[in-house]
Length: 335
Image 1 (cartoon, helix red, strand yellow):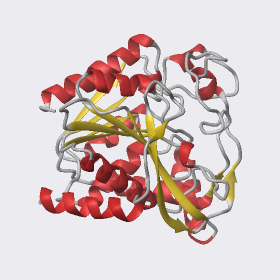
Image 2: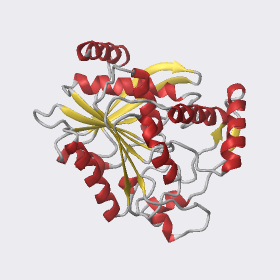
Image 3: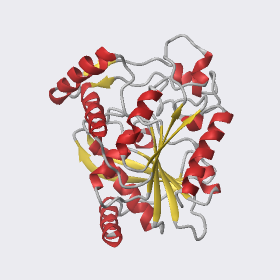
Image 4: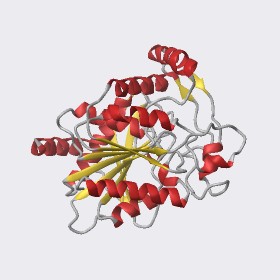
């Protein structure tokens, strides 16, 4: 079965990347990127971008990282840590995100989360073609919703050996009326009017908790990870709603899964609160922990004290705890 999967992956890779080559990435420090031309979609030309650190000698195991919404891969500390623990590291900027945003596109938009499956197929085919025979998939937030759905679509032919989720977007962070009435209504409208804008630009507090120029300690391209987000459309709401409903019905993934979240959430407002530096202000951590067991039979749940939404961007003590949790779990599972 592995052999069949390998040859299928090679065919996908050859079909979309005949002339693709790695070039130095914007991150510097030896990081490389490779852009893949994908089949056109309803907005026209589409690409996805694979980022990697140079491969370790004689290493045949790798980690592939998938970012969240309004996001892209910029967390060099993650790649460096994965490398230091003896794994090759890759990250994918999905279509219409980060390095893959094109002028003809509405950033971050999709009508179905299945649109990203071809991007992940392409990344995994490339990683295998480069000599890696064991792969772990790691994902954050919306990536943490996309990736289990992607693996569920493969059924008994899982293309990876395990899944690590950092604050996955398994449910909306709204009250009863919004989640039971308003969101389903917007999702229904999204079937017929996918490009209808239903939410404008958002609050900047989460970005302020991350960026060095405000209250955080990180630097990133705010054209790719926007301070006030980007207007959301009804078609995107529909895509998320459909994906979350499928998770809540149960996916039964047949691989080890680690699900991590902060130990607490805090409501985001325009006014600054120091709690933003030690809480998830994007999602409800109780929802993450509640729905995690729906992913499969081999789910490990863990909470990170004082973690923020992207746990690996938390303050040092909490992000160190996150890395220990990840690599301890990998060791226990024999990766």
